[in-house]
Image (cartoon, rainbow, N blue to C red; front, side, top):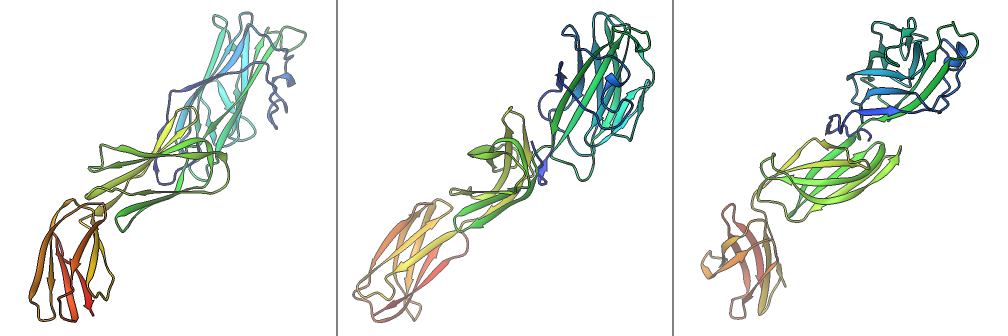
Length: 345
């Protein structure tokens, strides 16, 4: 998939093996200006193939990947190859050389077949900066009869494959809003993005999935996503995004954390009150708390116990016999007391 800038990147899935035959590939520049047919006859032979081995399921910027071209044909004597990458650089090894820049590679001299097979191994270095959404490898190999390219008997094979960059989150934020936590993230581009999993942990190691949100598939447009955790944990909350491709490969974002000590939200209504009023209150921590009422002189005139949790609790008071004036309603929690002012008509 595409890039997640705030992500933990890793090569996902097993190493890909690409074997394509009877596919036309047109190279720009290089030894032949087209493909091996510039030096050899190139009819396709269904009995053989050319394979690009070692290409990752997704590539990571700046990482070096050892690649191998494998030519298989039951009849050939010697063989050669050519490969071109849309980005990155090839590092030649024994028997290979760059041509027309560092993104093209070919053989230095034909390799003698062994058991109907020839291989060339070399390194491809992914671009460290300005990494595109994907890299395309076009490759070709020629199974030759050893007569220098004249007459018939040479057989060409061609293939092409694209390797995507893992998705990159250009933004990932976690913010406490009242009794909930808002998560927001953004992608600059996506390739084969099936869905996101929003995961939470209390210790930063053991994560549980909270929700699954569909991705945008393949797009070069900026996409913004959000999710609200309505029931965060008391204390530390660690969040990460798991991005999953259509082929099942996945990667994780960086971890974001928020601290949620006891948070109490409450409202008094009606205010001013004449005969009765209610206190609507909820808390991020389930526990019993004491509610006390004080008059303007600081004298306690009423006290009661209420069980608090993340559900709204309605506590009703009868103030019909209270003297008109200002009163203070105090909820004594395990942390800082919560206070409301009431006016009695």
